[in-house]
Image 1 (cartoon, rainbow, N blue to C red):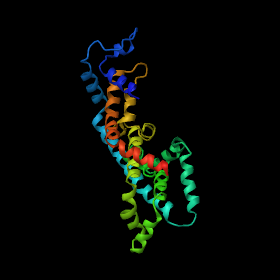
Image 2: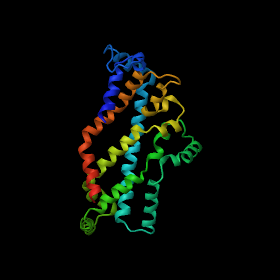
Image 3: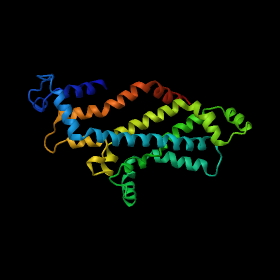
Image 4: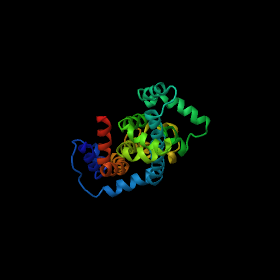
Length: 254
């Protein structure tokens, strides 16, 4: 995992000639090429605009599942209603199908809604998550039923039980869902590339494709753009990795 990252950093210090020459040289001849490569990637990609698009998309594709899947998961875990198990099986079955299967239908649907080549089109299909629903449901099922019964005796509604009793206890799972969906949204390439043909509506991952040439690519510039893309998510994972590991491990143990 560390070697590809170091290889990417090493390429930033090279020239285009050094990346394609034979015999291959591991180290660059000069270490002052990084400024040219970074500024070249920044200007060609319009990184500021791509960062804005990516942050907006990642925010809604993280907050959406966090809010909607939490309520759905609690309902599937604790509330009795007709066809509950059947509906949950439908949710689980969606997880068995690759996301790419739905892309054609989603594209035509958003095209009818005039959301192609818009920022909204980037995230609207990611506002719900079967994975988050399943993960949080397992977490809710692991909590003692006596807590909910005591809250009912105190006159709490389902909403109050969820907000005041359950949510504080499932913080590790919420952290895991947040980090996982943020990483998914930030690194997503296929959907932003399908739904947008306009360069100023792409995300960072999809925008990097503009640095790939038809016959030859400027690899130092491409690696500089890739580094600017992955650094924020590396920082997020390093800061919150304890919460992430706790959430996944605790849910798995249940």
